[in-house]
Length: 266
Image (cartoon, rainbow, N blue to C red; front, side, top):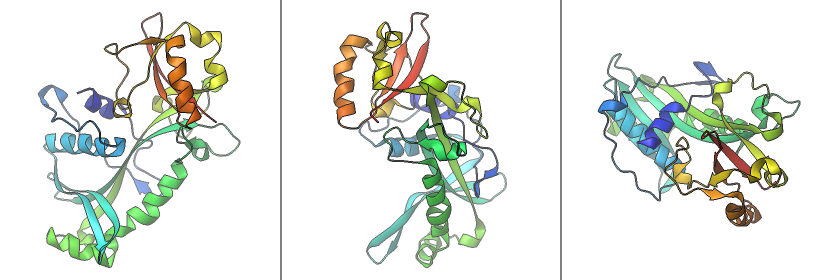
């Protein structure tokens, strides 16, 4: 259940339309009467999020999923996938939704804040993902190859509107915790990021830590894990950093409060 709670607690990066994309308005979900189905543990995080999204949307009374991960092919070559095709039971509108759930560290600069949102391993960037969604993923719906696939669902692209559902957890630099994130809101900040030199300072040595598996990244930190001291965890972190992998840490403070932090290798 923690995965589902964490997903619902992660806000979309904007409301309405921005960057040439319109956000899907997720329906209100009552988790008290929701019984989650098991999600395979070894799934990649993106596929795990798709399972969560599917189960929550299925639980809502408003939307019905007509198709999920619909492959569009040309001969034997896969051109891409349509993440979700859903029907709004209230309006009868059919909606194509491209789903994104991201973790971005914020790199301060004189450029607009959007240019400074990158993945903790520097392999992903907000503006690149926006461009790909707008210029590649959404136009796929109108391709000749998609026409036949949609017809098997009794649909035509002309009947369908397009949305994205773009959620993100943002991590600000440890030394700039009050960074101005406009046009984004402070509610998008879920933690901070530090370099190894900062993590080795006295400010971090007295705290205790847990390195969540990537399958746990969506969750809010909780106490039902095996906590380790700074000394106990440093060897694991150094191996990860050597392999250019930035670990996410849950941090437990003396006040019994929790924080989330990426330690970056760059």
